[in-house]
Length: 320
Image 1: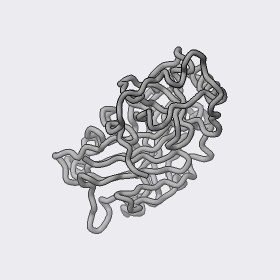
Image 2: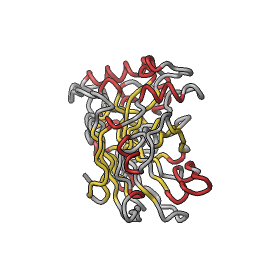
Image 3: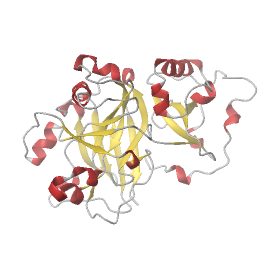
Image 4: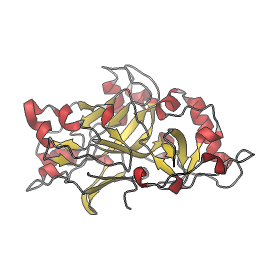
């Protein structure tokens, strides 16, 4: 798979080609997983909500199917079950999809209230560092300004020489809650996606290991390609998770190594803060990051990073 940055797509596309005169024709039937995306049509700067047929597949425009639906994923999730029900109707209707070549995917969530990250959350990653298994989740954050799309560039800051890779499973909150019980936690989750927790290790380790600055440079949080609804994922805690740099496999693990799983993280964090629809959780990375290699290896301009999780898809970002 090669990177497909949206900025290189040709212009001139018009949405109306697929929806002339009548509504949806029974052209294509979406089956299986529900993969929610934010996208832009070629020649447009307007964000829209869609359904991706498969990873890398064509996209059904949900806003064309139902113009009353919100046009951002956060607002879509805030609309609750009514919005999801409309998406299911579109999935079953056979609406004609927009060809993938005519759309550019954005990050599934672009302006969450919170981006919550979990450190040292894989048993094998802790062993890689020769550190004790945490007894409680290690929580830090990224600013939402660090979020970019699944094929957007990662900008290598001039302030660091130690940009590292971390493939991660992310999940998104779909229902507001505070003091959520672990037994009820999954009801507050909308779905899962792939994340890349890009990290500037030198800044992460400075000033008493102040992680925030090393984690939140602009473009340091690629997300995507789609928000796969929780009912479409067989077991989020038993998925293959991989990262490749310039085609070389550098991380190859399984989410079954997670120490604190989705339900535990929702319950734990909601003790302290209210969780809102659209909030993003990054759940930690498996072993194989560049920092712990001997000698350490870091990303440089021109490198291409692919992050992949079974059933969720692949994101591909070039370092610029």
